[in-house]
Structure formats: C-alpha cells, structure tokens
Amino acid sequence: MDIITTAAPKSSVTGVTAGSSGSGQSAKITSDFDTFLRMLTVQMQNQDPLNPIDSADYAVQLATFSGVEQQVRTNQLLADMQSRFQQMGMTEMAGWIGKEARSAAPVRYDGLPVTLSPNPAQGATGAVLVVRDMQGGLVAREAIPVSSQPYSWLGADAAGNPLPKGLYSLSVESMNGEVVISAGPMEHYARVIEARSTSAGVRLVLEGGVEVEADQVTALRAAGV
Picture 1 (tube, one colour):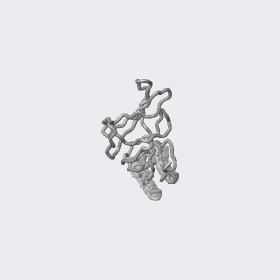
Picture 2 (cartoon, one colour):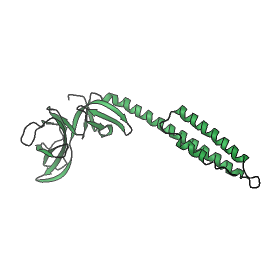
Picture 3 (cartoon, one colour):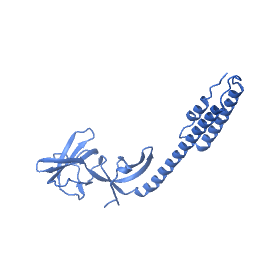
C-alpha cells in the first residue's frame, strides 16, 4: 500500500508566514522535517514488496522538501532585510522633522499665507493659480508672476474674500496669450512634524495633518525661510 507523501512539503509552505519570528520558523521547519521523515519511513515499511518504490523517488522527495525549506529561509531573510532598510530610512527621516518640505500634496489653509513654489512652463507669458476644494469645485483663479521664485498665497476666493480654513488642491496653468500650454500641480512648502514607516515606505506628516510619501518631496529647507 502506497502512502502519499507530497502533503508534507506542502505543509512546510502553508505553515510559515513572512511575519513569523526566525526562531519560530526554525522550530516549524524542524517539526515539519521530522514529520516528513516519519511519513517517509511509514511509506517504506508499507510499500508493495513485489513492486517497491524506486530509490530515485525518495531522493526526489528529499530534494523537494529541501528546496521548500530553503525557500522559506530565503523569504525570512528578505523580510529581515526589508525591516532593516525601513529602520534605516526612519533614521534618515529624523533629520527632516521640523524642516519645511516641498511637495504637491493638498494645502492645509489655516488663515495664514502659504508659500508656493510655481514652476511655469518654458515659453509661458502668463501663469494662473487654480484653487479647488477637496470635492473638486473651483474656488478661485488667480494670476501669478511667471517665475519660479516662491509665491505667498493669501488664501482668497474669486471675490478676494478669505477662504474658510481647510484643505485645498492647487494647480498652475501656464499660458501663452490666452492659450493654456500646460497645467500641473502646484508645489508648496509645509513643516514636517512626523515620519511614519508603512508597508509602502516612509510617509511624512505635514503641519495640519496632511500626509505625503517621502519620495514625493522635491526640496527641503529650514523652517521660516
């Protein structure tokens, strides 16, 4: 009577997760290997003497289990390396706390001027700041200088009245005469108050609670510049 043994290697895969500790995984692999050997011994004891299993089959089963075990150890090593890299990233981000980061994240307007970083397209003869609320509604269109120099946005609506405090999406339209030749998000500066490690990488929390991926930051400067 033949006993199917392929279930033993399979259990070594499903019983281990990338989040398990190294010692826990080692114990699991050892336990699975002992179970595998017991099943292999039972298979040998109960094989048909008139039709014995080829010794090459045993070698294949051992090699298969060894390959699975090696893959599990490799996965654990990669998980450990990823964790170390994230910790290194957090250490580097510590120096960003308290500084002002430039990004195209939504702007938190709290009644004070916001420093914008316009970048009109080359050849533009005019530039327009487009302000929208977080529902996408147009709030204001404001002509700004055709320059890459910082611009102080006062947070006014189309009538020049102060906007309510809250989040706004800003973009810049580059004009050539009356024709829009390009449009894109408007970058602005905001102070970094926290750095968080996530599965997708490091996220920065800006003043006002807006979050942005660290790799979306295009410039960094001392606060109050």
